[in-house]
Amino acid sequence: MKPNQLLLILLAMLFLSACQIDRQGNSAPNMNTKNTMQGPSDGGGGDTCNGKMIESYKVDVTSLDEFKEFIQPILSRTTVKQDNKNNGTPFLLTPTLKNWYIIDCKLQDIPKERKGLYLETYQTAIHTSREIFIDSSSYNKMAKEEKAKLLLHEMIMSYYLMKYLSLEDICKMSNTCSGDFTIVSKWKMFKPETYRPLNAEDHQKIRNVTAWLWTQKDALTAENFGNVLKNNDFDKRFEITSDVENTENKEFEIDIQTLLRMFKKYQWTNSFPKYCQFNAETNLSSSNCQTEIISDIRDYSVTDTVKVKQLYLKIKITRNSDQKIFEQEFSYPLTSESQKIKLYMNKIGSFLSAAPFGMTGNWPTQYGVKAVEGLKSQMLFFMLNLSDKENPQIYQMIFQNYVWYSFEDEIVKKDGATYKETCGYTNILNDESENLFVENELPFAFKSFMQGKTCIKSQMVIEN
Image (cartoon, rainbow, N blue to C red; front, side, top):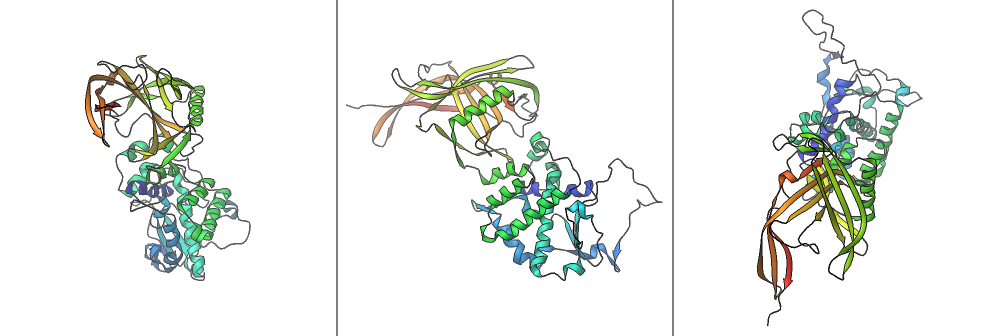
């Protein structure tokens, strides 16, 4: 697992202390209440249990035999080996993000109704914001497997509570993050859920995932673990970020009708990315843009007599700050009989993953467009979230305008044949290009997709 992803895991544990007395049921304190001062101190002091400081009971649970025998194999099976690296979920950090204490004092009982339990039980563990307390008198009587189940339950609870932490908090706890995380922490898609005390249903979900993990054994995989987490309302942000490590360069085959349906949904709901006119130095948006798209499947001329189907888009982007309009007709020829296209996941910065989908407009490879100096051509890129392949989402739209300023022909030999290749040189027209994103700050700057020399046509030469 890379440090950037470990950040997300760490984030969850921090929030616990600031938001509640304990995550198993007691309500969060009012953050606006002023502390009552008692003399020169802040009212706090050293606490003991049976003649020992609380700190004396701290343990490293990863060193316990029950952890090594039962928990470590579970963690290993939720980790994906990819390119000689171990990639997993933030669950991997839950054994070490909080302080664990196996203590000699009886713990205060948590009301059963808050835990969704209506039977006589013994309070063996209490989970607080940064600490986990285990009653040693109860714990030591348990069989080794039951001890491991208790540790696993507390780890799952820690993971469940991560959804109340900001990414910036996780970043600070890990001390390994890049600058991207300070930015993306502000994005709406990565906002933490508003904290509320856990209720009976929350505890039932935590117990459900704990029991499921314990029974999976060799059937446990990172993929089915992720599905169970999703079905039990764990942090949805980790579903997005896990794609960065686990699906990079992964091929996806998408039906063209799915993309067509996506464009029509965004058009009729007026929900295209709206932030635009990003400052080159600060990456902050200074305007909103309105987008209109007409989408359809149409005939596409390859020659005078040959036609194929194409995904056709007519786009009009209006920038609010100066009413500047960016518009063009774009085409994506459908050469496959199945009318499916292949997309590949790529990183956007170090945090997000997306599948780029590009179309061209007025391009010199298109029928009827002459390759002459001064020709202006356009590229339109969509950065897509494919976590649900039947309902893709658009993170970003990039409209880039280019001018061709020179062309040249080259004679090359390939596989024993001679070809004449026509290549051209382009430069982006920044004032006639626009970048639309779902948030008002970019984590990085986008540059031109086309730079320098581009070969646009190859024709076999018949030698006498």
